[in-house]
Length: 346
Image 1 (cartoon, rainbow, N blue to C red):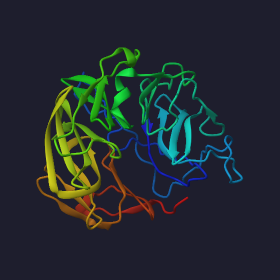
Image 2 (image 1 turned 180 degrees about the vertical axis):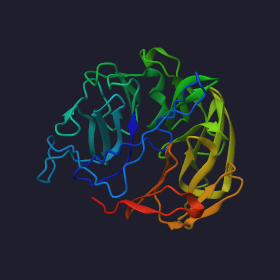
Image 3 (image 1 turned 90 degrees about the vertical axis):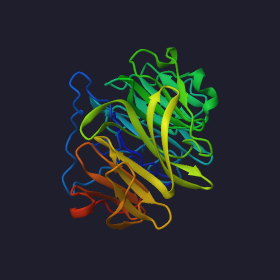
């Protein structure tokens, strides 16, 4: 699936769909060849953004009639990007899952069986958008009929907020990971109902929070070599602040954690092609830093400051999201240049 997450106005939901796969969102590798999956080139510089809604449902106070709330996850079907799912929540406003089959010209709510409409994560399992999972504060829900009906996956009931889904590997087998209050959930990634599979949990290290508000970053490669099990990272809280955490998955219930309490961070990105390549937004001085040795050493990234979200895609582009807009960089942190990709707030 194509995946982009960007908060917007509380009264007018606008999905800005970029034809990119950022931050390992589609990191499932072709294990027959060991090759990293191909990725489309990013849009050319100065390509205009298109607002695709939602704009025909709900009771917004604005003229466009958009649903009140805040977009969190947005996913599109790989084989048909016209099929888009989104959702979110903002205080009392929670839309449930919203769906378009015509690239945003029309939207419908698809919430039958979805007892919790506060949407924090979405993931499309198949290529066409029929098999989808949704993350909520009540755990994970699954639909097998394009959102026609949802089933609560009982095994995730006590996990709390499920916010970001990532596909990766455990012992050479494809798995779906999800960040939750309770820890890093995972399940074998198959196209048959995931509710029938065994959902497991990798707990955070003692003294560290779980993935309540932190997005999971993931890689299946290191120095060009395909890994048997994924490496994951995030900015988990320790002692009242976010710090860098990197974990090599050992099995479905355990990981080897590296915690860096001296590296405060608000967000981090792991290169989907190299687990040793990291971008970290330092929460103390708001400066962006890069590591090419798995976090042992860092250097500034062209003096960029103020990033809220960071990402790296499979083609090597770096992205930052801030109050000023979205910026990207194809030349790296030593010789590259940041260019505006979306230069205003909405």
